[in-house]
Image 1 (cartoon, rainbow, N blue to C red):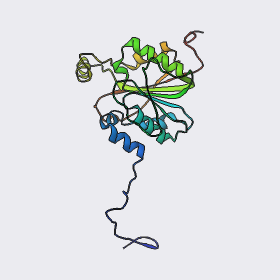
Image 2: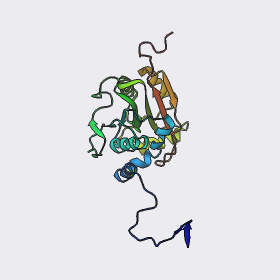
Image 3: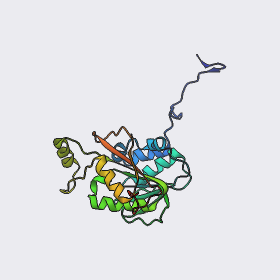
Image 4: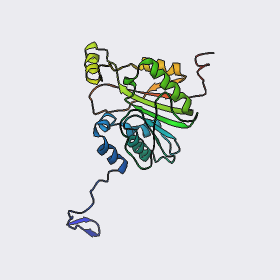
Length: 230
């Protein structure tokens, strides 16, 4: 039976290529750490939501940073080599085209203004307010003028019962996760020097089910000593 004008159908052999080609970065992300891929499922939408440009210098911080940095760089067709920052003791995966370092969020071995776009997926719940402020101040330092950082985390609920369930499910070694509202995260970001703070409609998150808070902060021409002054 003809399949199109001027052509005829042929039997498809078992060795033919798949009908849908999965981008290598996306395939590597899912196969490498599927649990983290489910937790950060809408991450690739950052490119369209924020109009990420090919010239952006990208930094991703977290346990799945190399694979996520590769995914974002591939989606945005980034020209600079993305940077992945590992902050825990787990071995990091070697990902082609991604520079990987191990550092603490509040002490990054980077020059001032050397990053245009920073991503922190599901990091905030492991930090108390004092450490979160230090990490945000360090982000402010390494971001360039008009650079942005995007953070997402499980959000605090108005229900004490829901918060108790999340605390039990997400707590590690007897610690209680720091689940915050937008107002709480925004206040910490403002104190760190960020004059522009907003939510971002990043969704859906597939696992675990529950509300998320995604916050975008931008480093403008303000400095910590003049923010809030006339």
